[in-house]
Length: 209
Length: 232
Image 1 (cartoon, each protein chain N blue to C red):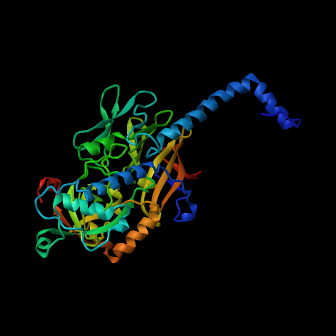
Image 2: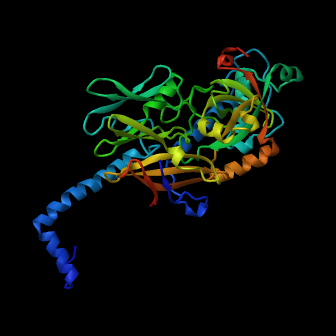
C-alpha cells in the first residue's frame, strides 16, 4: 500500500502500523480465506475433483448432533443425538432404492451447520438438478423442516430447477444459496440468494450477488 | 411461517448467468464415442446373438451429435436388434412418453455420464458409466425399470434406459400430462453429444427433429437389464 499525503492515506498508514488494528484484521482475514476455501469445496455439483465427494461437516459445531447415511432400503439420512444415540429425524434420499449407484449418489451429500448449531442445511448432490436441499431448525428439542422448493418457486421460464448451498453460511444467521435453472429453451441460469435465519420463525430471502 | 421472497421473479434478465463445470470430460466422451464407433466399423463389437442385425433405420440420428448413428448401428449389431416388424409392435408394451433432450453441456452436471452400467461397460473420468449418444436415455426409474431396452418410434432408435435425472421435478411438472398419466412412463430424456453446439442449440435441434412427437409413444421392448444376456 502506498502512503500518500492526503489525510485518508495517513489514516490507512496509521491503521497498518497500529498493532491493535492488525490484530483485529487477523480474524477477518482468516474468515475471508475460510469462505473462499469453503466456496471452492462446497460448489454443488463440485466444479473440480471427485463430484461424488461429501461436502461440509455432518457433526454440529457443539458435537451434540451428527448426520449419518443409512444405506439399507430405503436409503436415508438420520440426524442422531450423539449423547444418547437416538435418531431425531430421518430423511429419505432422492433415489431411495438401495443399489450401488444410488448409494454412491447419496454419499455425496453436504451438511452445513450455522455457527451455533441451531440451523442445518442438508444438501443432496445436484446431478442435473436431482436432489433436495432441506433446512432444519433445531430449538428446544424439536426440529422443523423447510424444503427449499417450497420457498423458492420455479420461474415460469424454467423447465427444471434446483436450489443448492453456494458456498456456505456467510454469517452466523445467513446462508447463501444458488437457484440452478434449466430454461425451457435449454439454457442454464443461476440466481443467488441469501436466507437470513435471524428469526427462525420468519426466515428472510434476499437476492444476492 | 411467513417468508418474504425477494428477487424470485420470472424475468430472465435478472439472471446472473453463472454456470459451473468443466468441458474437459466432453473430450473424453468424444474420444470414447469415436472409439466405440471405430470398433463397430472394424467389427470389433461382435453381435452377441445369432440373429441378423439390421443397419440403422431410415431415420438419421445425426441430430444427437457425434457418432450417434454409428453408435446405434453398433448397438443393434451387438444385441441383434432389427427394425421392428408389425408383429413385434403388437407384442411390445406401448406407453405414453415425453421426449426431451439433454447433453454433456449441462451446467449442473458437465460429466457425460450415466447412472447405471451401459452396454459398452465403459466408464467416464469420474468412474460413472459413460453416456453414449445414439443409445443412452435418462428415464424415471419408478416408471421404466433401470436398464430396460426401449424403442423410440419418433427417432427409430433403440435405447438403454440407464441414466436418470431430476425425476421428482419431472413428475411434478408433468403431473396431469400424458407422460405421467395412467399409461405413461414419464419423460424419456435423450442424451446428445453437444460437440460445438450450445445446450440451447441441442434443444432446438432436437425439438425440430421430433416436432409434434415430443408427446408420443415409446415401446418397452424388455423391462430390466436381462436383454443384455439374450433375454429379449
